Image 1 (spheres, rainbow, N blue to C red):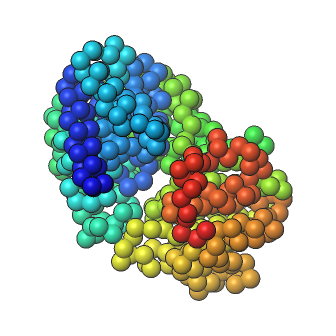
Image 2: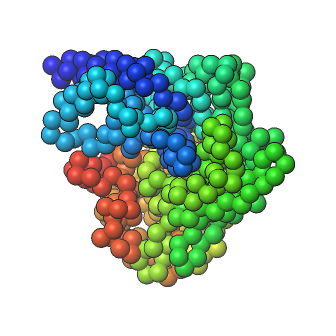
Image 3: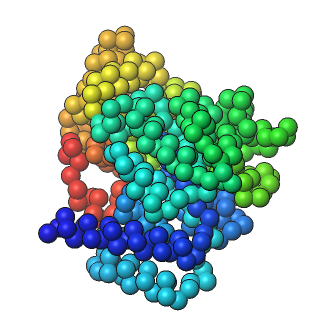
Length: 433
């Protein structure tokens, strides 16, 4: 009965969303990729909202329920009493009585877990502008695919679906993403650190100071350049998001100076290499939203680039990797051995990271493994010293944000600063509670 009700709801939302697109005819910017979708969505939303009535999908609404919800309204708290009846009633009302405040532009995430997912989402809303963020050599959500190429083919459907009058915005630094150029009918523009990118990121650096930290870099485009600074988060991911957003802004007629002004209002999402103060005058890099191989590599590279008394990595399992699980965690351990001074791991797969780090020459006395998230948090509390920089990362199911909450300087701010702090998430047990 429950499955039947869900099926009816899914089909109803699909119909209502398609009718809403037909009624209001908004511009649709669609974003896909294995990492960086949400950051790109937030950055694009910040840029376009500076000049147009824009709605970027809330939360992680990128599947067969979330995507139509983003089209139908600014819905976010799906667990509220009578939520779905209210959605249906309001959606039908907006079809009958035109809402003058409906967005001119929708910025939507297109998530893919299985073959056929992208085709289903494209039946709901077909973008005129598509952004392909990154795939990486070993993507996440691979357990239901035969390999990275299969994931690429599924996600690349968004690029092949864009009309010839539209635009495909591709990451020039990801070879697999650039393969989508071969199937694109639309105008192709690229972003990245590559010298071949249409909009190039140069002079990139991370910085940490008494106010927190962030990143600074320059955009080079069409023979000119502009400086950009983003506070509150580290790593190249916010730069990629800002670059993708800048190209989308240019597509919609904005100039680069106006775009960079709008990016001042862009705050990278919670749990994406966000910087916060830790206990004992330490600094935390909170990267707990989720974990994929490419994102893990970027996070450890960021940690390695910083100056600190000690660099501590607290790493949990990466999930949904199927047959590639051992290989990916072993590679992570080798990289951690090069990038940090102390290593904590949480979980069965985290233990693979620890063992690989030790085989790579990392001192055994500086490796700590745990099968319980609370025990790990208590030990980390004891080990932290003044001036440490602590990277915390793992997949959603491990709930690594619980470690952050235990060692952040102001745990009273957890609701505002950390991911998964609403009651429904807090009630759900993690893998290692």
